[in-house]
Image 1 (cartoon, one colour):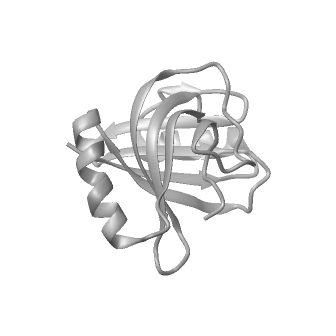
Image 2 (cartoon, rainbow, N blue to C red):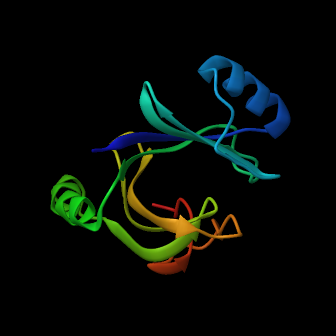
Image 3 (spheres, rainbow, N blue to C red):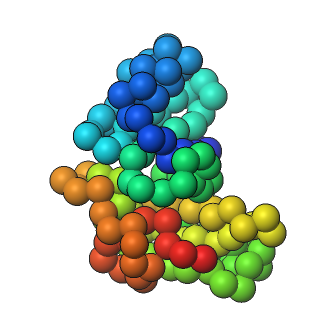
Length: 140
């Protein structure tokens, strides 16, 4: 089953955490000095915010899948939607290790489809587009 993913860049993490915790009636499941994440079941969403020096607002959208098989199945679908598919394996991003694919929609919004493999102690390097290692939201 897919979980919709939204990542928003914010300027004041504490203020944003208070706002979204109140709005969702839930505390974040991950809370770091520069990042917070809620995994909600109603609606089924992976909602994340971060203070990473990016423009404030929508950073990217995505779909989180629950297995390698689901991710492989999504690859063909994504490749047919955009020939500029970026593949990342075992990448460190948002305090998680994930395998993922990136595409951009016609409006230029980055879309991430990913399977989380585990937790890592660092946010990741979101400045270098890479096919493996550490990278978040590569330049599309």
